[in-house]
Image 1 (cartoon, rainbow, N blue to C red):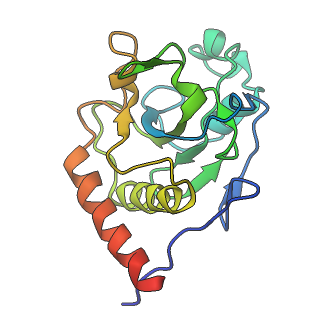
Image 2 (cartoon, rainbow, N blue to C red):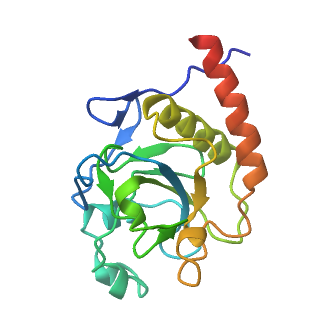
Length: 198
């Protein structure tokens, strides 16, 4: 079995090569001289507990139809995004260039800094707090984080956290179903693989 090529981000554009792009209007420039320093892992499903379908794309594109599901009445008005979503099968869709500020964290604090959107990258995993994430999602997440670490020297493998950790009491994702030790192990393997290609 051949070793897969690492993912690659174009530094000038902040876009991930070879993945689906659905660029969101829900983003803006980071503050001057601020670069990504933190990766935030989220969990998302629309409607809650349902996977597949167009609704995550539609939410981040700002055209989620409020009438399509009873739970969308309030959700449709949100102006939110993430840099990328990893679907259950491991497919990645990018919504915001990594150098831009996505609107994923909301009111948040990491260590002594508030406003995590300013200095973080938000990655959504399609899932729920209590549904185990898939093998393909862990592999894709580790590969994406490895690409981010290779592109942005301000990031570090030690600064990866969950939405629940930066917004405790307000958010619970990616939830107890997310295996942090598994992510760390998978990321270490991806970083070793990258060294063989450089």
